[in-house]
Image (tube, rainbow over all chains, first blue to last red; front, side):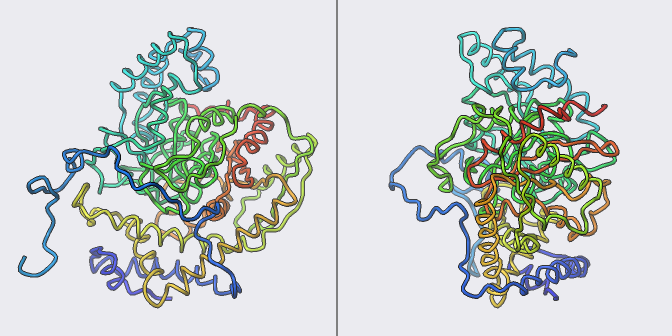
Length: 94
Length: 470
């Protein structure tokens, strides 16, 4: 099984250098070929398990409680602007 | 201070309570050992000496006032995935190289409230991705029993700190074996509790449906004392159920007479080192001689566990690591090293359009079958015993270019994470100068039983006292 590294890297927002593509392709294709063995298992009518201890829909009251201050929350920010996180524009010409 | 060698939490507790030593003296012994051994072993990424001595002094005041709780004044280390307010928290990755945590996780808060003394933050495979400790962006940790060998991972620094007397106990995380495997490689006791038994709040997430928080100690009883502090419901982690936390040391010495121990036939695999196999068989023989019943069982879907694990785990990793954009904290995504990139890409692939059903959905269905296997087995047995690792520790570099070979090291441990059951790794012997551990597995929330089973063996075979020559 072969994996398209440039496509997956784009979806995952990773920059992969061209000289790394071949290495990742062969390593990940080997893993994928291995895990494809799951197709042997008959799973017709079997439910999916995503939570193992049986909990579901844990609810809580929607109330406010003490939290990080604005200064604390921004203390590790790459760039701030007037007490907010500064990010690159999403749309063109911004 | 030679009397401090092989000191357990239990011994230290007694000495502290009798005022034979102070927490400050105790803390200084461990800080001194860190200065002696950390350069060659690379177990700590940060040592918080000033804060440790301050906390030790305040623990001494509490002891002087008559307080005595299990961890009061006990020096511990934390895997560098635990957020510690005001202290650098790296996840072993260059992405968080300069990140100063903005809050304490629940376990850290509980330890602080209980009066434990934080010595520092320990090394790990970056983002907890690895089985050897070699994927750390800050250099590999070395095995104290032979520094040419790996200590196991991903919690690599924590067991090494305990084994080499650089901490009295340490915390780690276990997503596919990251506590049990390194515990077995370093001759210490390691517990992966039931999923949700210990809050994950404030611990950097790897794979959210698998992550468990646990501890490394020299002895089984110490591990029970540690879990007593950290276990329980936390409103900040919705996966921690309202299940009562029992007294973990109360029945620890009740023996194994009449205990039904299951031995799954699927764990005898091609890659199992015959020396490890023999040692586990001898261990089982001992239990039988003590009056336990050994029952051969089958977990038919075991051979698919590693496949299921590397689909679910990478899928969840790709989602959890999506938040590292370098905007709110940390550096940008170009700082991820190869293993994180591999897992993010593999996870992205198995979740992507056209492949979701074939990989992710299929894996979640087989997970149900794995869970059914365990539920069936536990109708006939109380616990299972298996090796913690199919092999002895390997040489540094032996598997670094072959991710698949590295992934297969987890073959005996991933199963417990997929079905959420607890697993305790207990030392059973030393082969060719390298430690071997057994894994004891039980039903959900059976930690007290696991301690009881491990304690019986340890009392008769105090392998843990064979400390490395440093």
